Length: 214
Length: 249
Image 1: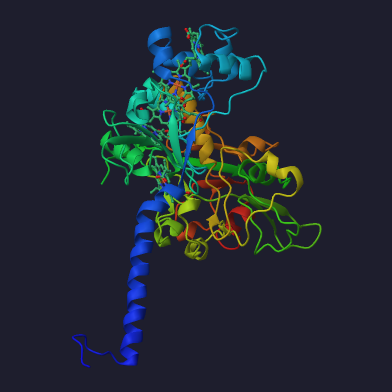
Image 2: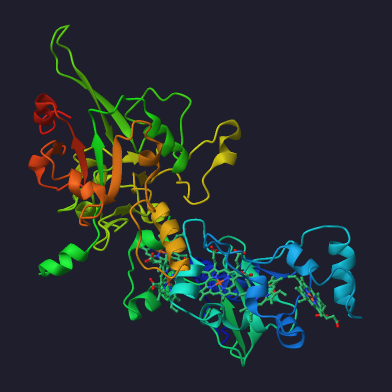
């Protein structure tokens, strides 16, 4: 009649079942939290047109300031408007299907491309390109990483809540360290406050809050 | 301790307001509202709940007609230079005194809404957002992109339009210049004053008009006896106005 297993009292058995369910649940949710949630919180996106920087830079031979320039009052033009592309792309220049799509879908229909932004700062931050590019002579790569040399269409991930984004590059590219990604990839994303402040401090520049915040 | 030379090189932005010229027209207050995305309520009569960075105070000498005299005091943030009361009580360092320019800022995203600063401020310049701002009708489309709107639960106040400082600095840096000229950075209220009663500049720079004006015998400040060294000076030729400033306003 007696087996090896000790008979549990009713109360003990109920406790064991509850505890078992709790721990199984805990493990399932922990795993989900670690693996699924990061994926859920970031939306993967691609640019509407497969624009490759390296191609225009190396093969066409135009410099950054043809497209990303300053207006006379020192404000930053940002991503180029259609007028700049149209200087060259009035008609098809080559055979590539991507260019064909670009010319037919956008240029000829006079539509603007809705480029995604992955360096956009939150609303409360004011940033000035002329202070850094003109005055301090900081190179674009210092802050933007390898984006100016993008060889393939840009894929990026945007946090659904904060809208902070980053671009995933190959392992050879430099990284500005966004946690939670595999080692063989490096990422470059929205600059964080400590990055700004570290550089300002190391160069003996002011870190008064109101300079960067509005 | 800073040597004399170092201190005099530091910028101290400040303002002078000539109350003899001020007509109380409130243009400065309106310009300030527009510039800084200050929300309005449908009922603005409750002055303990509404938000205004620039308030106009009307003060009389209390005498019977025909001896009655009226003076208007436009009152932005005084940008206290010494033991800035709000900065010393803020537990979140959401409001800070900048050594290099003398500007007392307010970083709204950092504010936790405890309102110690409102209690500490002797000039009552700080306002609390009791509600999320509501932009009535089309006013939401007129917001200034250079100033981030606030949310409920944070304190806000006049910052001497520090976004205009950033903009001017940006422009100067574009020309390869690290300093600002006198008229490049001016807050919206000063720009809006139709009487030219307000002036703005570096109090430490002898070439700026304000540095001359604050030395005139007409100059005085509000509640000077508290020794918070406000950087907003008032100018008046009337004795009774100057005497009153230390006591009543």
